[in-house]
Image (cartoon, rainbow, N blue to C red):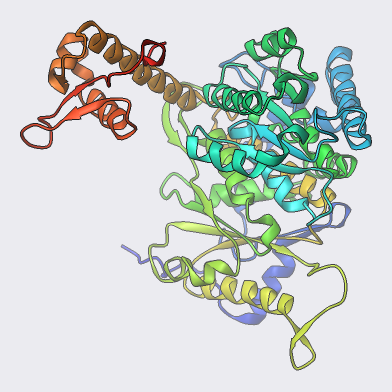
Length: 551
């Protein structure tokens, strides 16, 4: 068997002049969106694109049908419309076109009123923004906020409830404790039934009430029309309700109200964010693969994740402001591509694992393994040409800046990896601006759509996520059964095995053990030690009736 570094004639070219020639051939320059895509360190054969002409054409055709309003998500019988968000003229109906345009107008009007103090908190103009959401309802806004935020320059300071971790809630609320009356909350849940988001909303509402504040006067909802969250917001008189639509998925929602509302409130130029995405859509809509960066990117993934070897994708942005890009892409790519079944119902177990940090931090972290360890990945370097605004500062010889070092580290790492048989893609943008962030978002959205067509999977549903939610609901149901059982026993302690039998949940004995240990660790159960690790008995703590676990 050939080793990882033994290559055919067209692979792992090391002659510098030939690599320069290959860069000239395989790098594409997309000046209209300020982006360069370099595939010169991806070792596909010279006829790679030509040999895949049919699946490439099919992917272009599928994308064209999607943009026309075809049912691109057959499992849920839904259209997929995130491309219409930045060019409403492409929407298949007047109704959808109106929804998009009115949504953007509502965002701008609301943000302007908040900034002008026309809409304010009970203690004065809003200074803080608490975004309550999870997954696509938080990852995109977090990425954009981190990329575009200016120290001391944002209209409001944003914080996130993006997990069901009570400690995380407490940390954020502690930071906001003295200014809750000047804090605006945005609760985002398309279905309105996401439990993590529901929990975050209840935690925030309780904190406001304890501070003597009316949560409704500080809250907005972004949710499906008629959802449970929509009903709560309407009944309680929240400030405003922004609609979400079934043709937008969470992981492709950053250019919808989900992403535009927090961005506008922070003072970012959402017109430029939309413009960047729109321009990239135009560049990646053409069917000439020589000039389509999204199709070329997806084909580089196809080369590295073929039927024989499936490699992980390592995202290496050489810019602090892009350090959350890998987290954003984890959901976009892994939730879209990671599927058990293809569109024909065959078991394929598709997927691309995504991880990453930032350069040059990685050169002091996991670059060692990337260069010398298991060659089970391909890298994507994100290069930003602009160093910093303002005057340059030289750290050496009155000629070398810190930015020069950063660029040198990127080029050196790229070379060191390639010399040891590790392939990489390099994406270069001019700067970190609202326009360029819109470009990156649209580039990867389109590449994911193309790749899904190339491997014949539905990129727009997430049955594995739903399975996890159902499993979690089952665990919580077991916990309620435990409480009820112990209540019936009136304080009589029971072992895990006894609880399993009594609740008719023998198949969930391990779950019962984990639940009891969790509750005991938090003072919500009393644990009476017995023989060995699993010999303990558990009972409910004695407390007033109004403090009982099920009250």
